[in-house]
Image (cartoon, rainbow, N blue to C red; front, side, top):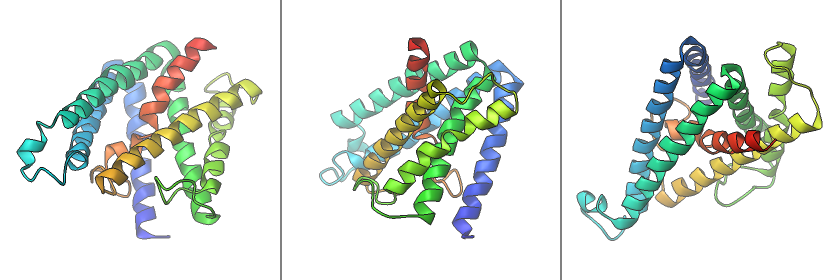
Length: 228
């Protein structure tokens, strides 16, 4: 087992433990934690955009901060992260409950695990030039692993779930959005010529590297829940 993989697994266990704690301990702690995550995402995005926008033509870093595209990217990110991602995540927590919130997070979590395992073990044809490490086999693994939360939460009697077409389709939808979100952030990182958005999480990089799929999957899940 590689050193980086050990770091990745250890960090994931710590993050999962913290997530479970803040989700069940108190609503106000949960909300505060969500907004703290949102703030870190905005900071990491700001640093990424700083390298993305006009990096070749502007030598003075202070000037970059007043670049119009840079300001638009930051403003759009701020509004999306705080009012859409954070806002709708809190609404899911309040309306559907803490267990269902963890269920959604688990779908994204297992989507990442499935993609990583299948991509490493099977490998094969690359999915896209946007993210060279992602493969078609990894995408298939992501979809397959996204179904595991149904089995997990059903057997533990945490949710009244059935392994039926409706729930399978829901998991696939959340997994798809999570993967597209991951690809979107990978595209921005590639354009910015950076590997990670930060260094706060050993084995993962930044917070945005860890939640890149979740920040898109949660709002879309909320909209889907309102439609069905």
